[in-house]
Picture 1: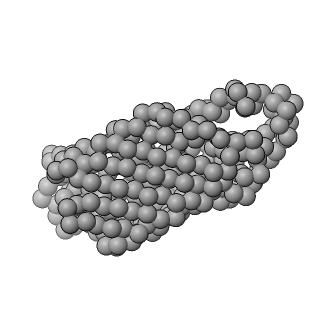
Picture 2 (picture 1 turned 90 degrees about the vertical axis):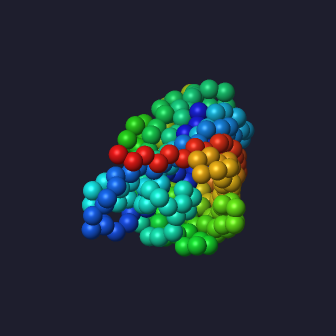
Length: 257
């Protein structure tokens, strides 16, 4: 899960690998990581300028409880191999109708929750996530992606690969649409976009462990808005090119209970 006060072009978020059910689990365990740091990214979808703000993330490594096992609490914290399910979460901050967006209605902050599937090998990964805005836009959104993975002898993990973001018509209208009333108040043309893939891009990330419990995490992300999103009056006065980056310190936890 990735959180920031400002919007960062969608980042890979908290994941849970779904393993086979063991015959009997001797230990109950929960393993996860927390990252805190600094992030920069567009102020909103289609913004032509970036801002810097506190950033952070929360990710699950695994859970073992009785006969149920999700992921591997004792496995590697970054890109554990295997096929399984993954949780997906994204927070999108409030967009205010001010400055170049004066006359547009505010868009409430949204929290998207969902799930996905992944296959992770030693040197590559593919995944697909779908989420629903349980707070805020009440729309469907998600991401498709792939990664090439480099694993260094000292625990260094580098990943890089393409991303494609998508959303349904309600999502598109929330962030790229302009109603007739908003058009009259803002001077922008009225616009009703359709759903579909709204961005394609590339993410590069690095994780360097410092010891068993601590590490440094960094990401760099580029997205280009496309389709109905790119044709939006909101984007046309901003930018189709969306850049985001983050760096932070990661702390890993493994609880036995």
